[in-house]
Image 1 (spheres, rainbow, N blue to C red):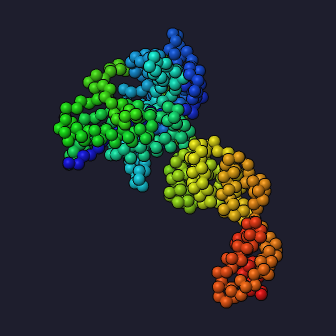
Image 2 (image 1 turned 120 degrees about the horizontal axis):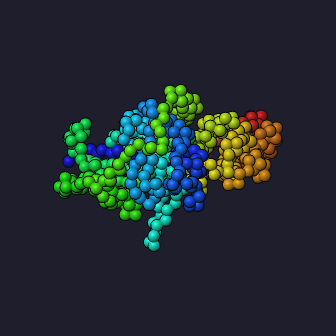
Length: 485
């Protein structure tokens, strides 16, 4: 029997591109030193009051527009009441029960395996992040740097039918957050986390009827896209096995966690035991009206996103779709490419160098493109040197590698190593005639129909010049000089 899979996502992404936190003046920034970005409001000291960060609201509204959501006329915040050591207030300021969070009922088109898909967005809401806990055998420690960081929670409808679709959507969202300067969306810094809901149903049933859906299983706090893929695939197979063994109907709705070490999802609690959060409107933040003028200004400020740049690279610069996808996957790479061509480099050449050479080398060195010593100025210079036939394509690869390792300019490297090609025709004519004088037998063979002997003669020119003669010019000159004899 075949099965359909129903997958929904709850994606949490910190808004990292504000100077301060969402309700306090504490610095909003990643720090490896614990408890340095903290203010009394974050710690819920008596007498402190939250103040809404307007920039965080602006970026959240921009995200909701990109997701084709409707924006509210009035913005509310609410208290989500629960106790946990990493929540100093004993509640979280969020948006939940009101009918209009920062964004409602939108959609996003995304690409997976060359095919366009659409996912419906249930809502997008703005809240404060909790602190982070580190657990040890002897106890636990809490780092309050993250407490109060602005956090966007995106809730989708169960529109994904495979792990590939879910991960492709998450990658698209990360790209949106990065290109719109909303967040670095760096999972290594804990800025992106995901909850996954998975259920299965028999293939012959109508998925439009919720009664046919199987038991929904929630997998909490998956911290990497690879983890999302593995967790979904494991959970699908686990549920299918239960179905085949006749035990699926006995399975209660539940919350599980993904365990990377064992590669399994592990039971945490039944949904019957779900906490009643007792939401109510945050009394210290009055509702406020969002003006149409402000919404219009925000919409106008949305920058070019990855899919728009991809279309431009393909249509304007004739970059292949494959290379365009690589160039736009990371915003920093796209900006490196655009800076390089703005300096006059041929777009196709720039694309080839970046996708084929630069990214491969950076991957081996475990560096990001921002950490590379080779700059767009260096790459544009190198491309021009090849086009002007100052160095050969083969020589350029060595120059490129050294520039990447040292940060020296290609011109300086080529000069130091004596790599610049001889492009003076008179000088090459002189060397060509020396070669012809030394090989009269080869001239005879050439004139008797063995025209491929010109390759040998050009090789001798290259040998005499230490590989510095421009090969194309040397071939043209050699052919002319043979005919004169």
